[in-house]
Length: 314
Image (cartoon, rainbow, N blue to C red; front, side, top):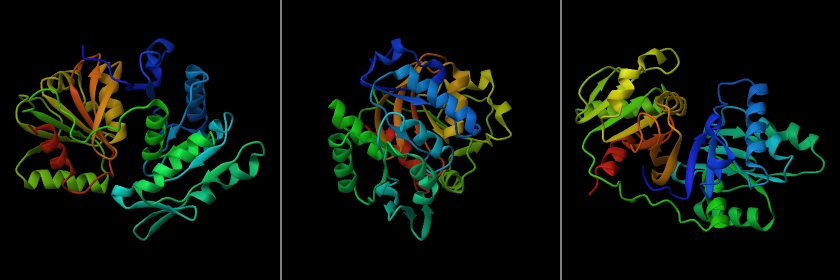
């Protein structure tokens, strides 16, 4: 087993008071994106019951998919909420209640208007932000005014680090051992991920559907998590365990692969770049294995190669 760090990620089904007490900060994966509103609300309620009076925050989907209103409605039972939707590194900012990426906009204020009208005892603040410095100031405001942070991750992480005195995850944290063989498992069909796959293929790396082969070098296994889940077999998982490191691309893909592996939790220890995180697996087929997790739309076309270079750095 690996040494336990200060933070961990666990699926809701694995969450227990005993496990939560092992870590100073624990992220609970609710797996609600593809569930209906009633199921999402029930799962969030279960998680809140399990963590008791501990401080909470919610990381909303980085593309505003899923049940944003449901999550915030549940948090309002605990206190006032601050929402922002900024990821400076990817040009994502929050301006006048809207998420802006280039010329594209998504109206957060309209999305949350029914909740804001329906609550009297609590407030929902939608905060403008564009830069790292803006997020730092919002984190301090959350702490000073006892606001519950809601965002794709950067604000939540800042509040957690400041409250718990944790160091920011280092982008150059040591991988722990030499990494030679790496398996990329890509189940998302997001256009950005498809660009990343094409770039790896152009660089000469093997790209194929999940199948049995020797775990050597770099292999990119690509499929549709929507209709090809049957390709993730037990023999394929056991083969993946033979690689030095795994890269799981797409949230639903990571949930499915890790869930089938029987893992207990992820021991978080750094990030390659914002919203591209690194961890060590605890329990199951991949016990002790390094895994990098990346959302489908995150990064540019070179991001898979960036991850590979990070894993293989000296």
